[in-house]
Structure formats: structure tokens, C-alpha cells
Image (tube, rainbow, N blue to C red; front, side, top):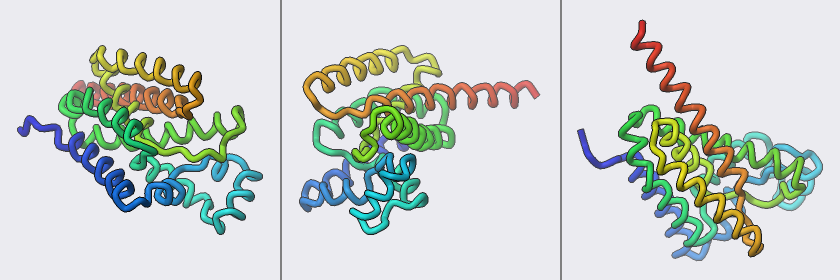
Length: 206
């Protein structure tokens, strides 16, 4: 068995490659506009109408769901992608080897989707800022942190605390950080992993 966590390394490489392409071709802003997730496009009819007028009807239900997925691979700047990929490298290898790639990748992607959904509900209905684009692998990476925590890795909790501190400092300095996506992703990863572990135990028992 390979000692290299291939899924984690691949995810890091894909995210880095997409960011590098946007950075080197000076198309990062366009990529963010075209593939970032807009909460109001899914949760707020008034906001959807406004966005449709601005972007030629590109925010239907299917488009919004696709954007929830594609937004996981887009980052605003070097600090943003570095923070996420360092976190993924921090515990991703442990989680991947502990649970296996067939479980690891679905938890990663489902956590990212749930994180966008969780963030979108709060942004559209509570904070009234659902027209702000959401990008970044934060939710998916937080899902892997939740997975690692469910598997007994206490370092995952340390990184979560670091995220809380970082989010607080960001709010003080007016840096937009979708902390709700971090929280939603962590919860999803934690619960999904516990369910997978329970299912695995049940199969062994039978």
C-alpha cells in the first residue's frame, strides 16, 4: 500500500492548479464570478431576480447547485488558498489512511456542499448578505477536520480553534471570512464519519 495519501495530494494539486491558472492568466476575478456560489440564487427569490438581471439568467437551480460544487475549487488570493491547503495537508493524510479513499472523497465533497448550503441559509435569511460570492475549499477541508476529529485525532480540534481565532481577527479587520461554512463543513464531516464508522461496525457484527 502506498504511503502517499494520493487523494489528499490530488485535491491539493487540483486546487493549486486552478488558482495558478487564474493567477497567471489574470482571469481569477472572472473565474470567481462565473463559478463562485451566490446564496441568494438558491435561497432568496428577490435576490435571484436581481442576480438574473445582472448575469443573464445564469443562476437557476441547477446552476446554483453546480456552483456549490465548483466554488470548492476556487480561492480569492494566495493567503486564502494557503490557509485551506495547509489545513488539508495537516490532517488529510491521517484521515485518508484511516478511513480509505472510497469514504474519504465522498465526505470531502458532501461536506463542502453542506457547508455552502449551511452558509447560504444564514447569509440569505439571517445576515442579509446572500449576494456575496462564496468561494474556497474551507467547508470541504473543515469536513476532513471533522472526519479526523471523529477518528480520534485531537489535532483537528486545535486547527478548528485556530479557525475560530482567525475568523474573529478577520471580522475585526473587516476581512470577509465565511466562518459559517467552516462550522457547517466540520459538523458534516464529523457526523458523516460517525455514520460511516457505525455502518462499518454493523457490517462486521453481521
